[in-house]
Length: 392
Image 1 (cartoon, one colour):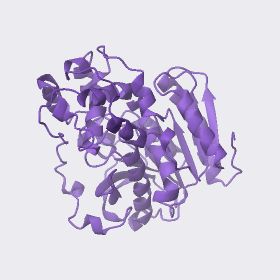
Image 2 (spheres, rainbow, N blue to C red):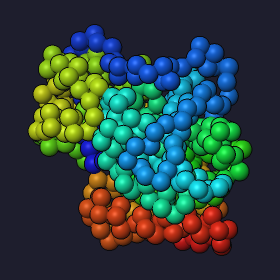
Image 3 (cartoon, rainbow, N blue to C red):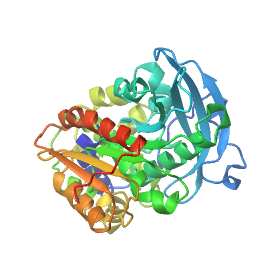
Image 4 (cartoon, rainbow, N blue to C red):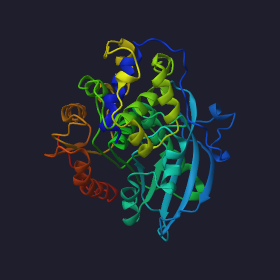
């Protein structure tokens, strides 16, 4: 649930920019010891979406499937080459199945928390939901869309990695999915990755054909979310802190948060830098930004605002061209409705085939449950080449 705590994280960003410096650099996750995750030295010579290597895997509890992992070349927010990983589960006995790229919830800082690991170690929150496409006879790809540095909170990065993961899955001849129709889907943090992939696709991956895009619970304006936050202790502070550290990992020169943490903040950063969701929630409960930095200055830095805008769909000029289904809770206090509705309206005015579905629901994850069934029906209709409905 990235969206639930991102406002807290962004307050930490702002606090950090004005606290007394501690001369600390960003703290990155411990690299995965498996050589499959090691990028080759010639990675920059590859094109985005090119396959680096593949391997077949044991799918463990996901009965009726065969699995593959694909390493591929992608791009970070600074335009530099990075290596991505995605895990593909395919229904046994189905030839040329449609492909769904499912951007799962990643609320973590450690590499073991990414879907390529968390699918099999019990950390993935929405593993069951991610398998629903399998029941419809579709293949599902779950990318580690936060990149090798697990940059929790970085929206633009997640969109590029998502798009490149789809291209890589299609290019991996062993999988036989080169001509499969493609959909991308996700909710909350996964909805942000999906929404960014949709908006970036016409310019970043114009050769990639997408039949359907479904995204819900989207944090479309990070600045708006940040402005509504105070500094009192909060039960979800651990995830907030993780998102701040993730943004610093992606923007180390522009958001030197670690350099501004006090002694307590540096200890907590070290303690949690490889942690997954449950650890972060337990050990971060009822801490606060006040305890980790010396200033209460909030959103006064133009650099911080630039980074927030760069990762907010509300301020990004890109418009999806693929059929797009968005659902949002009208009273969801975690991901404000008006920023999503404004973004969808802009897409409509630009001629995009968009359908916005509003649920009169306040609770964030209840809206997810309410919307996913119809979202999957929307995907199935696109795979059948039925007429595209819009709310424009």
